[in-house]
Length: 372
Ligand code: GLY
Image (tube, rainbow, N blue to C red):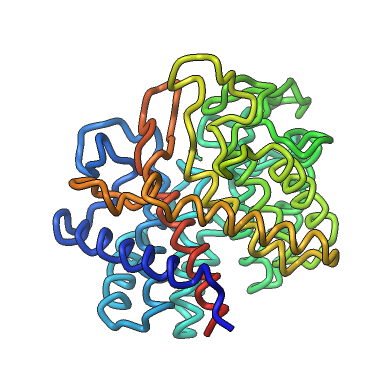
């Protein structure tokens, strides 16, 4: 029997394909991060260059659904433009860049060179390891651990699995433990950043760049943690990581507003004016939806599996409506409206953001694919 969601999701994916095709025509080989007034091309600051894998990754998702040779050609071309990043030591985002591009490419072809790129990128990321504090440091500096890195550390487990390199596995495992013990709270919420004394490795406290406050619950950070620990469980089979993802999911499910799209921070004071008050982050909903669809298949508890799927579909149902999907917004070049990049820096606030686009497409494709 066809899932009633599927026709609407297919229509949203068709729209997503049109928007991405238009971007590649309007601005060939350009990897934007966020829109300004709905336009991808502007002079706004990047903060950090971390999102190339999402545009190319969407092309791989479109190819997965359609088997269209044009998407395959574009996916390979845009992925190849990112290959040099395998040696990039300035960012902590190599998982975002390579797991969404070279991994599907390698899985489609088995070409050894693509595997080599994935392994090298995993080794480069592992060089961020801080031996005293036992974590991979963020791009901010050696004292800084970000929750976002949980979505990148799977690349190191991937490289460890491919090579049998136990040192890579040790580094990745230590990072996951430190993040769980320092950034994931007992109630399942997460801090954005932890600060450490680099010489002693001593933990100095919670901090944030993109959330409301050090002790708040930045919505996207929680989504990164939920999905990241779920991916680590998929790559290791170690139940301790599934437990963390489920703790994150508990917080998500019990704090989501009635319309199923989170505010940018779960502790935002909704009486404050925008952007500090009731600003939504559609990208956080898209990431969590995709993560929950995986957790549904991983959890051994039937009631949890049902709750994860229902919540994921409720979030996607909200996002495919024209309040969020830009389908009825003339001139808007993105797919999803009402995302947020960096509130304090006023970058990409209430705009389309490239990771929101990718995880939305990925989540919809997972649901649509199941019907095949
Ligand atoms: N810094 C990664 C993010 O904006 O989620």
